[in-house]
Image: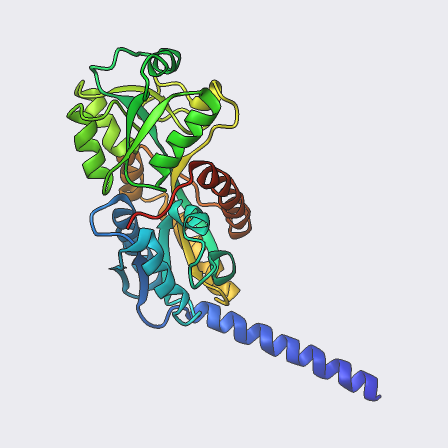
Length: 324
């Protein structure tokens, strides 16, 4: 009788816990949600976060506020979210920099693998290998051959040391033997101005900034860095087609502080997947040359770990240190 009573009590407790959890899941959120963007306003991450916040507001019936906390390659905003309560009311919208920074900043006071919960990879956008029109190369092979005719190689401008544009160049040097002299700039705008102005020979900008300049004849596109061709630059080959395994992109994703309830993760993921079908987000993706993803939390967590391992190898090869 005691065993039966104990079993019945346990079953009742489990049912009660399940009903309480379901109730919480249905109630979330009951107050405004904050999405922290660890970069300055106006960039692709910020714009995507603001479009998603509108879809979240519709889905949740609560205000969803985007807050910019820029600095240290995205680490300031990430730490702010990590130190926030793990209740689903403070989220992080970031990029591939989260994977890069694990190796680039080895003495951070947090570990994103332990302190953040990957919720969903929202989108992926390729990087495009470009040259200034004055560079007499129209294919990758021609570019490699040209670089070897110069003692210091070709000048290569990046968005900054340790950025995906820099590390894509490092990877290309390794697999293709392209000879480059790296010139880091303070951000994507400065790098693009120098490339269009002919101050540097080679650049690896995001498609959003590369495509208009290619269309205007100010740059010549040679290839994209992702395994799939770009939907907005379909004429360009992939580097993977020449160097199998070459795959670097600008991806955007949502994270929560470690310990966030599963029902919160599930609900946010569902809202993102639904939001990606909205006309505004589809237009953004098309304009950015990005592809919607909407991966499940477990799938994104596995991808995130793979990205950390990939960039650790490239950062080590490059010898990159954080810009001061």
